[in-house]
Length: 253
Length: 253
DNA sequence: CGGGCCGTTGACACAAATCAATGTCCGTGG
DNA sequence: CCACGGACATTGATTTGTGTCAACGGCCCG
Image 1: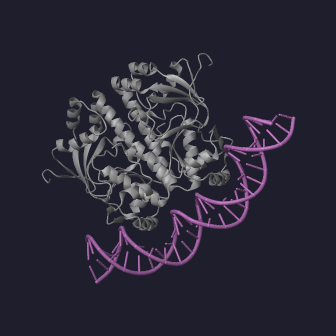
Image 2: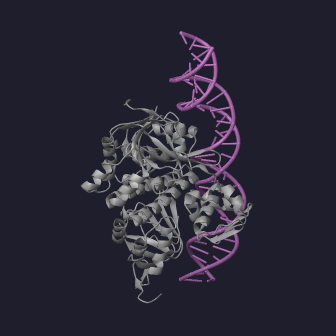
C-alpha cells in the first residue's frame, strides 16, 4: 500500500494500486440494478482512475468547485452537505462503499454541494471524460448510471418526507433503518453495524440539534436500539421498522 | 380541442392533437441545458404520445403503481408527494410546463411516489419504450435526460436543506423564489405569477401546518410579498432573495 | 499535565403544532 | 331562488416539541 505514495494538498494521499478489483465493486453495484452485456462489463472494468486516501473530517470537494473526476468510494463513509446562511449544516446524503457521491458532476461539473469524509476513506477518482465516453459508447452503461442517479434522488425524496413530516424518533429510526438496509446487514432479529458519526453529524442529517439527538436516542433505547461510539445495535428490527415507518422498496435492493 | 375526445376512468380525457408543437416544448427544455445534434433534435420531435386532460385535484399516478408512460406537462401545476403513517402528506416536488415529473419511471417503472394535479393539467404521455429507444440510439438524448434527472435531484437536495435547516419565513420565501425562477418571471423589481396552491398544499410542501403558513405569509407581507388566491406578488425581489437565502445557481438556468 | 472535542444532563425559552371558533365563498339540490 | 353543506381562509388561546444556553465529565492527544 505504500509503494509509489504521493502527497497532495491537505493530507490527502494518492497511491498506485490495481484498479480492476476496485472497479469490480462498482460493476457489482451497477449490475445489482441493471443488466449489462459482457462488452459493457469489460468497459466498466477498464475505466481509468487514481486511488486516493483521505483522512477523516476532510471537505475534499467544496461548494461551487468545478471538478473533472467522479469519486467511487472503496472504503469509508462520506456525507454530501450544504449550509444555510447562519452556517448551519444540512447533510443531504450519506454514501457508503460502492457509491459514487458525486456521479451527478459528470453532467453538471460545478459542484452544487460539498463532500466531507465522516471516516477515513479510500476513493477511486475516475475522470469524467472516461465515464462520458463509456456512456456514449454503451447504452447499457448509460442507463445503469442514470438508474443509479434515480435511486439517489428517490432517497432524497424520502429524506424530504423524513425531515418534513416525521417526529424526531421516527426520523432517526428511519435513518438507521435505511443505513442498515444499504449496508445489507438487516435481518429479522438483532442487527448491528458501524456508523462512524458523531451526535452533531446525526443532527445535521436529521435536521435536529445534537442535544435533541441525544434525548431521542435515549428514548429509542426503550425500544432496544442503541447508538454508542459509532456502533448501531438494533435488538428488534421489526419494531424498529414500525417506529421508523420504514419500507425498503425505495432503495431498490 | 373536441375532435376525437375519448373518456377514461376518473374524469381524465384523452384527445388527439398535433404532437410536434408539444414536443417542441420538451426539446426546448432539453436544449436549454444540453447540446443535441440535428438528428437528435428530430428524434425528440418524432416521439410518440397521447395528450391527456386531467382535472384539478386528481391523483393520476398512485404509489407503487407500475407505469409504462412518462408524462410531459404541457400545461398546469403538478405535485409529487408521499405520505407518512399518520396520513400527513409531504410534497417532494413541484412540476411545471415543460417538466417530466415521472421521468425516473423510465428506469424504475414502479412509482415510488404519487402525482397529483394542483390545477387542471394537460399532459403528453410518452411510452417508456420510445424514450428508452431514443436514449439508446442517441447518446446526446441519453445524456440530456440524465442531466434533467440530476437537476431534479439537486432541487430535492435544496428542499432537504430548506425543510431541515431554515425557519418558516425563509422556507416559504425560498419556495416562492424557486418557483419564480423556474417560471422565468423574476426580475430586479416587482415579480408576480400564478401559483395555484391552497395554504394546505403550501404547508405540505414546506413541512408546516396550514395555520402556520397563514401566519408566516402575514409576516412576509411586511417585506412586500403577498400570496392571495393563488397569485404571488413580490414587490422587492432583492430583499426576498435575502430572506429566502436564495441562490439560483442550483437550478441551472 | 493540560486543553480540546465530544458526550451528557438540566433549566428555560420559543417556534410551531394543535385545538377551536367563525367567516367566506361556491356549488348543489330542493 | 334560496338553503344548505363543504372546502378553504382567518384568528385567538393553549400546548408541546425542539432549540438554546450552560455546566460538567470523560477521553484522547499533544
